[in-house]
Image (cartoon, rainbow, N blue to C red; front, side):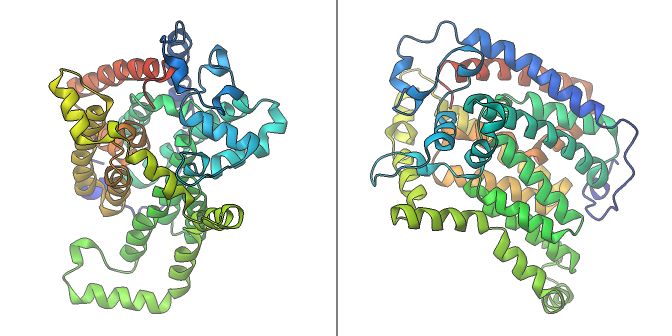
Length: 402
């Protein structure tokens, strides 16, 4: 499909998949692991002299080197330890409540099967990413384009994006990516109950999960005759109001179920710590850190030091531009997903985390895949992403990149 209208056609009926369609997603998964795993293993020897300053009481529970320990860095420590010893909270101190419960809960449930918390977290993250690639292929083939080259490039770009090592680590990226894909694909298929229930999992995974209500809401509105392009037409509003009257139950169901994961976590925090917004309190401590401010990083830039903060700013600008093209080619729903996912860390000034958060913005990789029809563009993306993935994986294992 070559034109904007064809690529953005969310109304397509599911199409019969080609034979052995699952082979390429499996190849992409294995190929990306062949890049990431050797780099990660080699990067742990030696660790920097001051790496131990990053250790906390919780990180001391796990090894920091070896086939499993090399993945236990930064947020991975919190997710794994929550699965082992649960949450704690002290107002004014950074702690575990900043990290949402869906992923640690899955680790806790499956840990008896594998006998090791780190191994369990790694198996879950990698298995969910493989499933995400399979779902991504189906989403592309059924709703975006049947051009196999574009589909293949979309999957490959996603899997070798510089921050894609997070899909191999005990982080929430794989779970959130899968939940986002299922929610949006369910909305395209008019499977509103599925979108609502999986949306609840997304909102229990991280704050932007609640904002999946935007693409789902826009898709529901489009079904009922209202889009951003027709927003100034009275007929579109009449059609939308008619949809509210005839399908009010779906609207209420989505409004209740999609944020249910967040509400459940808030109720838990209220019952255990009498602080339903403890996650915001703890996250605010991190966002107020000096190293996250523009003034601090401008001063470092004046000293000739390019900090991770500026890497995040550059990534933000690049994905903001890609979001515009997502809107132009793929529609407002997918663009709203990208925009909301970017705005949350930007509003919190957590630019150092944006390279990580951008890894789940799958519509942006679709745009790159269309551009990759030009051989030189595809070659450039593959080279830049491969080099970036090597560097970022090294920096993560070295306790530098979060």
